[in-house]
Image 1: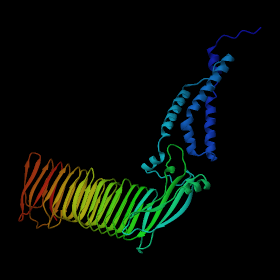
Image 2 (image 1 turned 135 degrees about the vertical axis):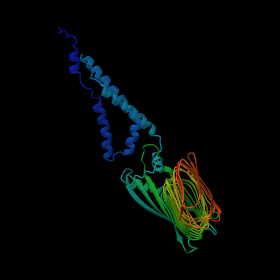
Image 3 (image 1 turned 45 degrees about the horizontal axis):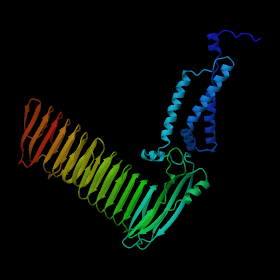
Image 4 (image 1 turned 90 degrees about the horizontal axis):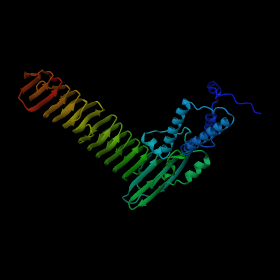
Length: 471
């Protein structure tokens, strides 16, 4: 006869309730996956893809283990293994991570990396690096121009002084893969081409879209650096998605465009058009005009015989020097036009410094400290929250300066003649010249004629001092 079971005792329930083994089993499964990754049986990308796809199976496994543990415990008359508050928190966190991974599985992670300018290098994340080289040549049609297209990789255009020489393309292809055989197979599918289309010679790096990975599947990563040797007088157009562009020594127009990469163009006897979305730009020694648009970091233009037009957003330092005709600059924050730039212009987020301009100078901006030196021509400035320091050069034109919450300093020759209309609201007004300064409430006003008169000096500011000094 079976002995009767003892009555239920809560102390016994709390003391002898065992822990569930579901957590350790799940940890073992995760550990095995990462071990296979370290042993290169599966790639890290495959691990991520497997988790993003199959993580609900871990929940199913966890539930099955709990059901089995509960059934065994009840058949033995004891309490089921506990699942505490910490386990509930970890379970919720696991579900959130799994849902996020499933959503991220459909993203183009390579494009994300490109757009935020992430360069993982060749550190083994995408596999071992393998290098390949391909060379192609093609005769240039009569009066032909060259169109170059690149997806991932730099483009360098060299000059060939022999005008009858064919255009030569050398592709330095770098592939990251798990093995040499995998890299060889992938390289075999790439085929750089040069094709004639009328008088246009089209050059393509030969990259196909197989290397663009969607989700966590990390296949081979491809970069194709191109070098092109072309006759000096052939116009060149380069379009690159991700990579630097370098074009030098051409006696023809050049047009370049890149989404992510630096641009260098120099020694061009012709016009230059450049479009950028991210990267530094250097353009120098150009006999024609330069047009720059898009978005860029640091911009340097020098020794431009024609005009220089900059239209876009420039987030770094902008430096211009020796612009032969005039400069026009447009961004969401600054509108600027100036005549021939014999000296230098440097501008960043908080400062604008210009020296030696022949002709008019006009700028509309905000939150900049502005310093102009040796400006011979009319000057128009509209600014706010910054100081303005002017040193016009004779013969100078009319000066019209309006500043909001900032000082204005003007230095003029001792023998200068001009008409003054200056007003400072809630500030001071000082002059080394004999001017009639009146005070009306918080305003300081100076009006009059200095010397023989002449050009007009109109200065207006609030919450700032106006100084008119002899230089």
